[in-house]
Image (cartoon, rainbow, N blue to C red; front, side, top):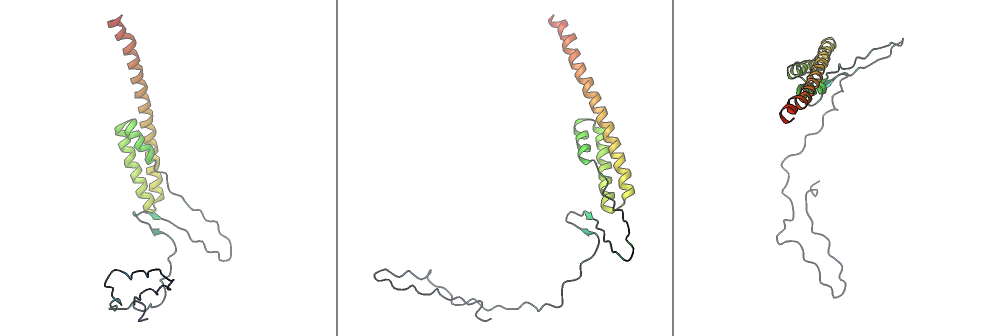
Length: 166
């Protein structure tokens, strides 16, 4: 163990007649590393046992796991999934369709995510339905106003511009 940190020079090359021997290193080289001050403490026991169920990932999201133990009679177990938060559609309706309803849809989407992370499926489903409804209304109003805008632009160029140029 004492030789573990020691540094020894490389072995010499065999002489091959008239060839010159290579130089040894860069000037002063210490022959040993300084001794280490402490040793690692000995390991006590084993790792702690793994927990069953959910665990927290980075970012604070909680992923729920289910452990099923078979004892005697087989049992049927329903595993509920996360409620859809419609965050992508909420951002789209905020930017492209209807700003006020898009903001309300993003708030509902965030509530859905929070309820999903807390494990409250009923609240998450309720907020998800509200986000979906707000997104559909915002999408409908946005399409309606875009169509009205295109019709008004067409009318402007066909009626009013033809009066001044016609």
